[in-house]
Image (cartoon, rainbow, N blue to C red; front, top):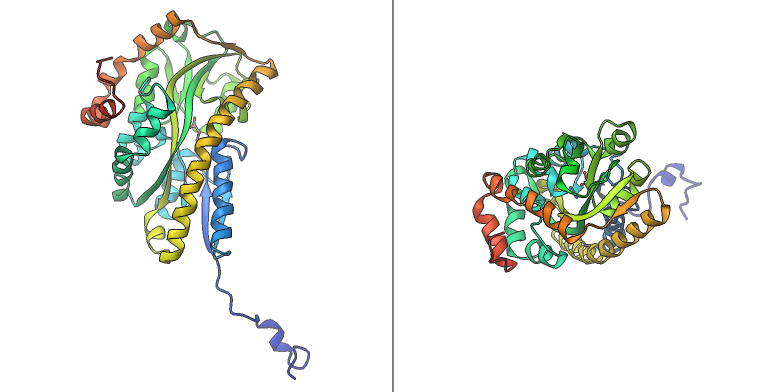
Length: 330
Ligand code: LMR
């Protein structure tokens, strides 16, 4: 019998020819504990299990590989294959329509948001990414943003003159200017330190990001404004995705569909848990606005819908309003 001892070179030959797994690098900017981080890990598990190891998903949280702007470039170049950026990150890519989701008070509930992103309007928006060498696989609907600062934010006047960090979205910039804020565009990975050192006075994000980034340690006040919808688009490098063996691609698409359902449930739960955890920490004063305060902020911010129409197109806004049954002019 031939053995590796008899013929030493045999030992170096693998018993079965192994093909290297297809690697998907999934880069993101939040912590592994934030809803997006958990969903990325969930997708990894499903993808690896269901392809029997033919696909390996490497998840890089916390801007470990790339910051917001760089990760967009990296996915186009194929240096990473998958991302899930927030809507406010798509402007610099030249796809401005996603900024419509940054409009203050676009949706009154997450059900309304999901009706748009998970329906035909969402599908047509995803197609706008293709000329950029990117495919949109899914929308992950997170939750609503809240305002934080070191001074109380009750009425629109309270925002005047504050420096607030924004994502790279012209619509968010317009929203902040409407309040007399000096918007400072900055990568998410730089935000904590900017708040800590006073480079900026405040910011906006959902509870889950505020908590997992420990912003409650460096911000004294949070107002539950729910003024803006916050969600993600899961995107992949188009040539990479199209070259996948068809059975693998179908399996991954199935895994993404399930991950999206998982994300929807998780995001809702985690947002409320994060609010409770922030409350429990006792580090932040949490303000629930009165009806009068809510109305004042809304009135101050609604002109942005009209002002920024050239950014995303009046027609798209009309379509969304029609779809969610908003007939009265705001
Ligand atoms: C931010 O940059 O403020 C957030 O959108 C980060 C994220 O991905 O949730």
